[in-house]
Length: 114
Image 1 (tube, one colour):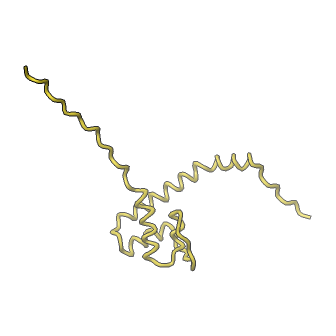
Image 2 (image 1 turned 135 degrees about the vertical axis):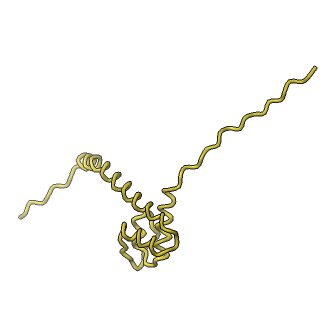
Image 3 (image 1 turned 30 degrees about the horizontal axis):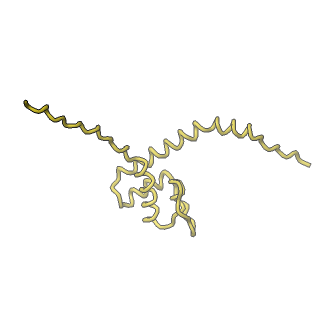
């Protein structure tokens, strides 16, 4: 009988997850940077979809559900749907935060003349 590997304890799993977190975050940032570069290509053209597909290769599924992450866009079969999906995620992430207006100055009335 072969020795089966022992399952990790919860604390060991947590330690491994914490150790892997910086690498995962760095990989996600690099992925988003590559996808943002595709925004330089005019929207609606196949070249932009080709750029996205070069970063995340398509893997169409017949009954793909609505994507909850940018990496799930690859499962969409139709090119137009896939392009719109990528645009939705990437454009949402690349928008600058809204600028806040400085508070308006109150206009002070001059004192009454006596």
